[in-house]
Length: 75
Image 1 (cartoon, rainbow, N blue to C red):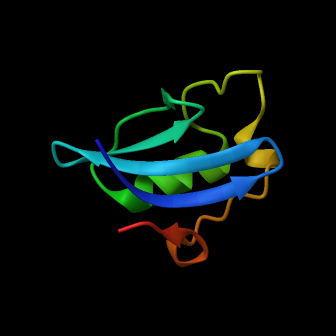
Image 2: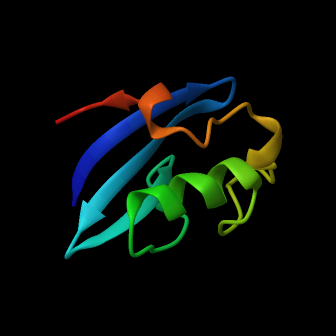
């Protein structure tokens, strides 16, 4: 799995990774879903529509932007 983007929040960093042509939001080592494109992954994460985050945090309330250009590109 290759980490592509990072966004820091008050509870820690979130990542978007790519694996086998799919995009995966990741928090604290946990995969939060699998998406066809990076924009879907970021939009669902920002909107709180991914698998549950450890600790029960609502990702829609963490200030995660839907605009991928506001994330830090890692590669």
